[in-house]
Image (cartoon, rainbow over all chains, first blue to last red; front, side, top):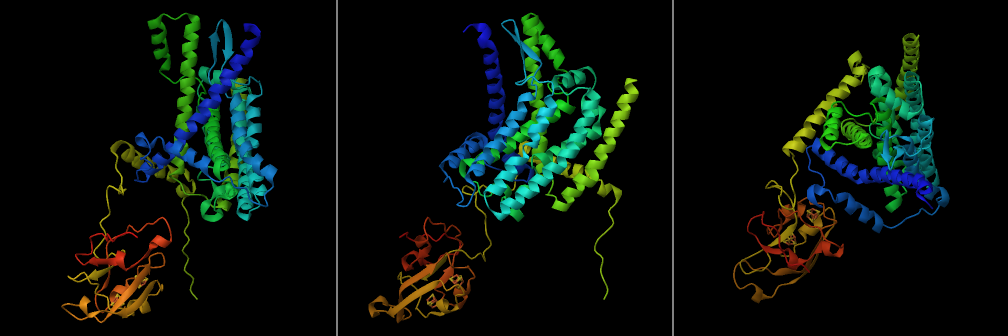
Length: 358
Length: 174
Ligand code: SF4
Ligand code: SF4
């Protein structure tokens, strides 16, 4: 096998390793930050005994998860019971494959696009996999044969389905603005003009609220409302199966943050002020055009990562600020407020785009 | 019958959610910065730092002894009788005279005196009922054990000279 045949596979493998490694590597850090951040916001200290600043606490947790009894309820439907946690983790990881994390780099004279799956209908693919996030919840709740689990699953699925509508509508308004469903085009559009949320602030807000509901995060974490449902749909899961759900929540958060960054906050478009830094580095080391492009790509990855980090921080911040909604309030918010408003917003945006383009 | 209406009309600002949410997020951000940058916290770092409980705190029991290291208890069963959790178990016997060389003559003695700390609700009735000020409650709140059996303390573990409530009850472990 020569270089020509092996290269496409090698670059794909490298990209997958990068994205999956980053996504899963961030999870323990997020778990740590979630706990310490919560503690700081509540005037506590948080886990600080294991390792420096308690940073090894997630590691200790993982060791604990591995040593726990791998329990399966007697009456559970084994197949779906085991399928659910896997699906929970795989769905958001798959969705991440179409999020571009940089324009392209040049390796050995070949262009490597920094996106795992280059498809034109990228955003639709993400939506499809975001919709798939309902299934692990239903399967987990139903297969474990527990009343609490079923209730949690019911809540979770109705919540996700409801908020998907307003999420889809605000997404649609952005597609109209960009005139494309390809994430690369969107980022290019935003680099040339403004960031999406300046064009459509209301759509951004609705989308942002919806992703809280989609990822089952507080204030919308009713599917696992521990005061009413013990633990909701993952009540019967222990050991590593629970850990998978736990990881899935964070991977879904990363995916949602990457999605909102791409759609509304310039995606991998470099942060303002970075261009100067890039020029400085390129001039200082005397890079050629290839080197300059690769430097730019590195900064693009950095920009996206910092945007994702910002939204991850928002997730934690909001979680420890707001109490949980009541279920009817949640549905009211979804159907009576966000849905009509995002519909109106869609119409307004459509008319505006039509007006400005003609 | 008069009805008291406790619900109120929400203002448009309250109904809009967002301003209130922003105020809340401002508060948590303030706390976050305080905690993160200035290390401000109310946590008592437990094993190193201990909470000072009030003098009236009812912790683990002890049985006071006289200068002769003889327990003051005369096995009168008052504590066992009053105990609402029924966690005191006494077996009484006669006390030999040579065990009372001086002082008040105690004719009865407990052969065994067990308290099941897992059943005890730390109400302090036993302490109040005791006519001999024998059973007392200390300030010790560290009673964790690794088995249920260890939580049942016997006379040897309970006996202790009475020198202040706040000294931890360092009875011998079984
Ligand atoms: S404190 Fe109350 S419950 Fe405990 S032994 Fe004394 S009387 Fe019984
Ligand atoms: S501890 Fe006090 S109340 Fe209990 S049996 Fe002994 S003397 Fe009586």
